[in-house]
Image (cartoon, rainbow over all chains, first blue to last red; front, top):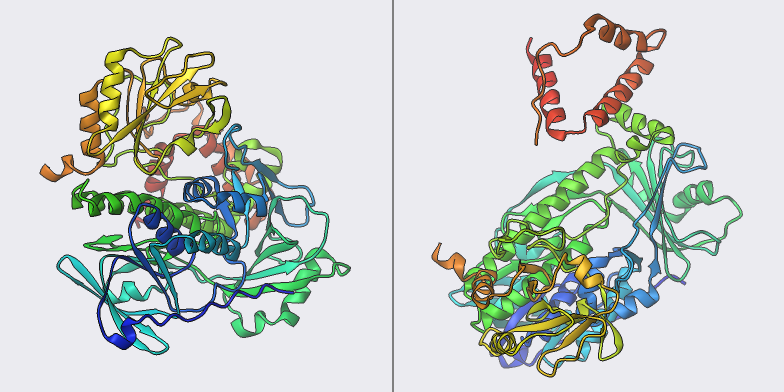
Length: 559
Length: 68
């Protein structure tokens, strides 16, 4: 049986009949993976949220199926990565095939850094992601998820955003402090705000067939260039849970889109690929072309764009939903701090700065993959085939094969929130880069470093085996008790004493110290989204306070 | 450190270099020649390595081609 998305009851709030204006802190438009995660993050930051979703059901079909490590880390902070990883297909190996050669011309291993909590990549149907997120949301009292509620108009006025909402029984108005548009590629909010969405449309059509069959097949990503079962075009195969396989056929430009998706027309393709003897059933068939576009601004006053409403890429590289999760991770803490007055409104511009950079890098990667996979000219095709032929015999050419560069977090090396290094470092994690996980022990129990970071500003102080003196204690406690607190965690070698004032992370494998290039006395300051804001070889309280000002957009104010 | 793209004579044996390139195409069809050219460029590009040098070389090649 193909998946049937659950149906939710259409919500008709009291305001429809009373005619009063409903007030809330944040309106999130759209209940796809990005909107749901946005709502959960804001809710956990203590903000009241109303989520508006025009439909009364989840997306049909598998849609976004690849979830990369960094988004899983974000979902873990939000509390539902465990379900994702338990249900998902964990994979690391990708193989690239060319023409009828059964041997891959190239194979790669994502080679996840061992000793991290989250795997490199998990495949899972989008509806599972949405269901896990909704379960977590439903337990929250400060989130109202409204199915069958359509944002009809958005009017920013002064310090407020007014949203006209349509329901099955009439309309009402919400007065919110903030609005986040997570309403997808065709974002109505984007049009309402008159926001530009420039970029490139690609002509090639791709046919997705998600099919269910039982066959022993490794959990690997397979990509074919010009295989006999789809001559002159590409095919991508991915495994999902429940014996569902994603097959993505490139089908060219001149096709009848209505005809090609009919099961009787898809079946011959699948039989040619899998063999006549494999029995299968369809879970989802879809045809798509794609765009590489982005909005001019992701932050416009009190209105923000996140996920597909803000940027579109080709699916090669799984940079769609994965990027969306990183948008909301970047936005939630900033919105929360500005809302509570801990940071000036200026901080919100850094969302635009950092995430537009990420969008541009994703679009660049995606466009390059597309040029390789679907060459736009004869000579481009000649080069592509030359790379693939050379790859059989020469290692250098394999680096040129681009069947999609898989999503990795984009660092913000020049972000205005960073405090650039003033000390000499050998490696470690550069300011503007997301934290690297490592195993630790807390009170004798195995734990993970990333689980200790996030939500607020956190510091890691690398203490020696003898611990820290009273003066330093007092300084660190003072930082933790400030209006804008920085909670410092002590990283100590195995065998060091417990500390009765500060949390202690025992670096029993020495990996925290190694991965952060740290020595005794080093200090790392992390933002609430687990990105490094600053680091020093030696702790000085005034350095921390200056870096904290920068990381909350305060120093940018006077510039 | 980016090295400069060398546009002055840089080989002791220009005639030999030219001949190697021409000989690569011996008895090849036009299609095969295009394929061989692509391979040669990719091999040399990898050998050079520095993307700035390659970008400059590509820009000069294009500009000179369009200059009629």
